[in-house]
Image 1 (cartoon, rainbow, N blue to C red):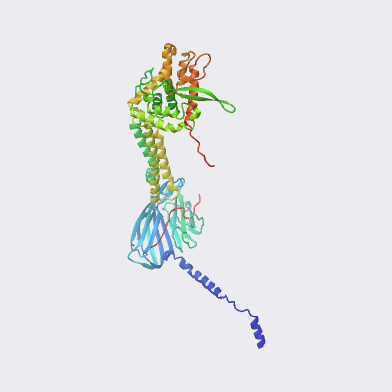
Image 2: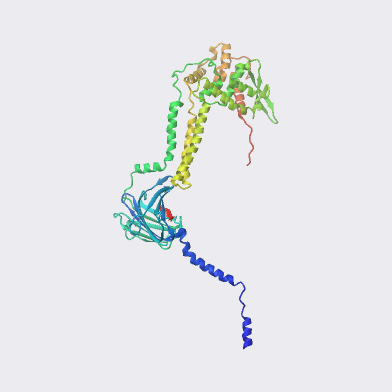
Length: 594
């Protein structure tokens, strides 16, 4: 028997040398299980009961009483409560509810120390004595009144309220809510709904007792974990609750979204600014026919004065005027390409005329054309002349301003208003964003009003910028000359003029006609005044047996239009290729201990 026993003993498995870690693992599991309830006391406390009492009053106000039973696992001063009061509707407009704290008491009805402040979108209520610590079970009863909590729909009114907010960072072991409606509402006219869980949850782990509309009960069927809440909805027919008037609601909504008014204020200011400084003086009502060029004013200046902008036709009219006065000649010649023939405009510099008397913009045009030689074509100006255009524009604007035709440099006026709009709109956006942050409006709705206000303001300034330059009385008189010249174009008959006088009038006023856009009519009126030879400063094709002013004007205008296109062309830069959910109502928020 002894041998058998030893044999049996040898057949039993020996204990594993690493069995000690099994014991450690089991101990760790037991420790974690035991720590479960402790972990729920996040921040040194937990909430054993959270009971909310909601009473809807006849003026659409809501009286709220929250009874919060807290268990402190370590010494603390008390709790704090964060209640949201600012929201954003589906359209992105901000709105607020009015909250007035009525008081905070303990279970026995004794008032507790409180400190109330505004923190972003929340009203922050700190409860407790900073010189005293509490432990164990404590009960806090918070009472406050809310205006604007009841929502009026098209066919019913409703209360949609976060009875227990989803921002508490601790466990809430029991959560309930009771809603009291006005006595005039019947039980069968009420519909209810409730949801629990994290924000957005549609879990309906809630029991509802709606036997009496004067005391509708809601209770969560489970404990709420950290950042879980309880939301209730109660709807009833219209006519039982009186809402603020439309004017009162509009005024409230206006103050909630004041930044959207700023574009209208900008519009009012811009209109007043235009009325006081952007309009021209009243000129003569009667139009006097003008037969000769204005003294000391070139066609480029006239064209600029008419529309308050230096356009390419103003520059090409200046080129033709320089040719008329003998500073250059203009011609058209054919250049053969690979498979076709292309007409180009040819400019040759004339040295007989004294350039000392030229105005700055005229001298800049002349030097810009002949920068690379005494004879150039429109193709030579391509991707080169464009560099001179901004300086020519500046010279023309400054010339008309210095001579008293504009009250201020139009270029500067437009630039100033455009930049004011850009920087003003940007500043408005930043101020609006800071205001939205301070008021606690959440993204992306916080961006809507600042972006809309800033963008509309910038657009308004840009739109008014073109109308803000104004002419002086002298400028209005020159504008009247332009109208008188257009009247002359309509009335003139070349056969009533002496041939030499007609040729002189045709050539000297042709640049002005080009600047004013009436060159074709002007040329038609003077058809037949030339024999074989046309203007000495132009070399181009003749029409028929003699020189045709209409053919000449058409050829010249086409040549100058093509030249204007190449003048403005710059080098191309390279490039590379109906229900509800938890947390969906008003109220709620969260809190903590301190």
